[in-house]
Image (tube, rainbow over all chains, first blue to last red; front, side, top):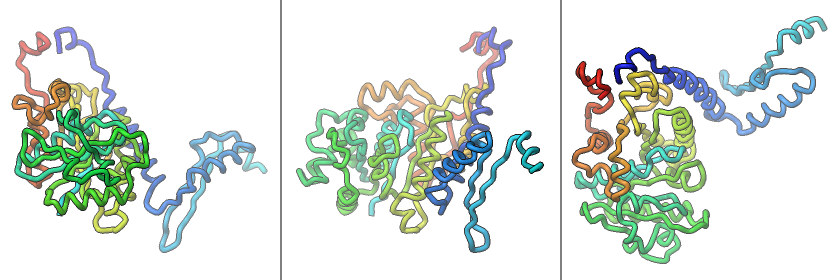
Length: 92
Length: 270
């Protein structure tokens, strides 16, 4: 570190890297979690294609999760609708 | 029974071959009988790092296909009595490596009385990488403190936990270790690089070694002398520590903190 560097703050990107990795690693681990069926990613994509025909949702808003609860397997599926649409959906 | 250790990473260029060479040398220096195998079929490189490229007559695929005896293909290291190299084939045939063939070679090495078999994995998650890890008892996952390397390492950890013989047989799985390379304590101190602790937390694994970024690594590959043999190198000492930890010794980490500099050294930027 030279004299001038004493006055210049270096960018602290390491914490950004750590946070990004923490999220993506957790997501990828749950996607390949033990006993998770191979078809989940494809199922998620096809469901997304169908939903987008009717509602303009963000791809990240479609969640497909596979879990086990007291002896039986649960396929959980959730779509977060955009604000305006949600209001409309309630009105129907 | 030989202990089989795969050196793997997913991402290329992080130091798998450098690490394989140094771990093999380090174990052999401690009197172990060691065979180090290059699994990167088509892209042979371990021979260069070990400095035996001109002595390759027969390779791994020749042994598997029965063109020669295993003994004819094992290249005896000229520096250490108990160290042998098995070079990768330069064939372009990706199917040259078979699971049965690899198993046969590993079993024969074990029967020949080798203590350790180091499998230098190719990058990626294709067949070569799969076969390099399949029969492993332990895995050294080489990782740089950098986003793509860490993410790919996690992918490899997933494969180690599911697509290996030990995982399939359900007998405790492969024992996994992290080895960080190209570590710069100075950049960690300034917040530019993830720390050992950060990588450890993300991947949830114990660290077996931290090798500092060092110009000695390039010098070593230029010369064909594994870096661990350099008497005046921090990287060499770090690899020796990693070998000690693999052998179950409790060794404190060196070269992970920036050395304290005096006032004038800082002022002058040295």
